[in-house]
Every structure is written in C-alpha cells, then in structure tokens.
Image (cartoon, rainbow, N blue to C red):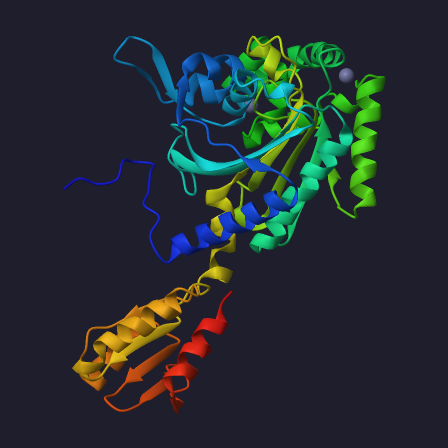
Length: 411
Ligand SMILES: [Zn+2]
Ligand SMILES: [Zn+2]
C-alpha cells in the first residue's frame, strides 16, 4: 500500500474548514491593509536560496529539497518565500512602480526537518512583504496587521517579541564583541554553536539547545551596540506600537535564523505550543536584494505565519463552523425534481445544502442526522415541513417561505 511520504500529511475535512477559515481571514485583512497577492513558483534555482537565505543556515545546509533537473541545473523546492518574492520584485522591476509594494502569499514550503510533533516537511506559510521603504512606520503597520490576522483567526493569549539586529555598520562591531566573549565559553556549548563561533556567531543567540541557554543569557546584548540611526529607527518602531496600544516585549537575544535580516525583527509566541511556541517570525531585510546580486535596492520588511501551528491552536474553537445547513429529503419520488430546483436556488445564496435521493422518511431522517445537518426539509407529495435536527421541532411551511428562509440566511 502506498502512503503519504514521511513528514507530509493529508489535510482532511473537517480540519480543512479551519484552514479555509484562517486563510480567508488573512486574505480579508491583507486586502484591508492594501496588500496584493503574489504567487511565485514552488521551485527555484538553488542559488536563490544559498545566496538569499545563507549557506550557513540550517535551512540551506541541512534541510533543503534540492535535485538535479534533467538538463543538469540545480533546483530546490522553496524552503521559505521571502527570497522568491524579492527575486520576483527585482526581475519584474517593481522598484519602478510608484509607491511601496505590499505583497502577500499563502502556500506550501518544504524543509527536510527532523520529524517531530507539529513539524512537517511540507508545511504552509501565510506571509507578507512590504518592499521599497526603510521607514519604521512600515514596520509598525506590518506588525499591527499580523496582530489583527492572529486575533481575527481566533488566537488569543499570544505575546509579541521585538528586537533590532542592527545594520551592516553596527552589527560587525557587536559580532566582534560576541566572538571575543564566545572564545571563553564556546567549548562548553553544543557542537553547532562551536561551529557558529567561526561561521556566524550571531546565530549562537538563536540556539535552541536547553543546556546552552544559561550561557547565551550572559552574552553581550546587541542593543548596546546599535549605532545612532539604528537606535532612532528602533525607538520609532516602539513608539508607533505604543501609540497603537500594541503590547510587546523587547528581547535582545531575538535574532532570526536567516542572515539577511537588518534592524527590526519580531516573533509571536503562544503558550499552548510548548517548546516550539513560535507562531510567526518576521523582520526587516534591507540588504537582501543586493545579496542576490541586484543593483536595485529593495529594503523591506515581512513576516511568515506558520499556518500549521496557527491552525493547531485555533482548531478547537472552529471545529463546528462549517456545518451542513440544510438536508433536503424528498419523501415522495415525484417531488425530486422540485427538490433539485429548490436545492439549486438555495445553494446559489451560498448556503451549504445536501440533496438526498428520494426515500422513506425514517431512512432520510437518519441520513440527515448522520450528515450533521442543522435542518432537514421534508418534502411530501402535498406539503413541506422543516425539522430542526437538534430540537426536533417541526413546522409546516410553504415552498416560498422555505426558499426565503434559506436564501436570506447567508450573504
Ligand atoms: Zn546600525
Ligand atoms: Zn548551541
């Protein structure tokens, strides 16, 4: 028997309704903030990710699905979508378009992670990028928008963590200080950290190994090393969040797993998710376009929501959102065509309707019950009855009354 590949899964009903709920909430809010959808390919040239994400990251060094194409080229299933969006921005000269480009995407990403609960090798992200501005006001708006999306999706009790990771001018000074301090302690840290001291010490701060945490706490803070322009930028982001009554915690150890981040970086965590408690990460990446070899500058900020985790946390609340509204039961064979016409009319209003094959009353009621219908419409040869499947309450209505009742219900 052939099964789904390890680390992948089928999203089945009724869970798929929760996915649709979360995605439609996100689309509605993206639209309200004047973001437009971008759809980039699932696979790209491997170089896009080795350059754009960084050779030293776990994503590129351990987790990418890379394969040789039939013509010998190297392709990779996208492990994230910021680099592809920036590639598209540059390729289509969106920098020539007036104003900020505000783009969003929803779709699958691929990483060959170690299998663990709640982690999938094909996982889904809902993300957005605002490209073409360095203004801290753009950062604050992006953060506000993502808070709106999570709240409207039904998530509560989450925490917003923010930090600044500096810029190419001030960060090297911090990294030098960090490296200096790490010389003394690195030998007691995990293997990855020992390697990172040489390759990218900033990523030591990002280590998730529990034994390393007490050491990480003693390392220098980047906030003490920000230069004047980065300080001013970070202060402005915090002020704009304060003015919008968005609460946050400044977490100086918060660095992102990806190398191209500059200045503002943020994460949203939720208690119910345990150790893997991050629902979302994001930040500014002013140097990404240049690191992809572009002469066009494309300073931007973005985030990506881990949709699998978001769905997991809001699933219980939304389990019953998408029930069958109406089960139409033709008790008399001769009424079947009438039932079909009514079903189509009511379906056109967006109501979820099931039309049964003609049959005996008792059997049809059983079917309505099993289908989880809210109401059953019983169509006899000379009259119509509507039965509430929960209360058992039954009433005789005219055809027009029934159609009106179910076409006014939705939309
Ligand atoms: Zn700086
Ligand atoms: Zn470590």
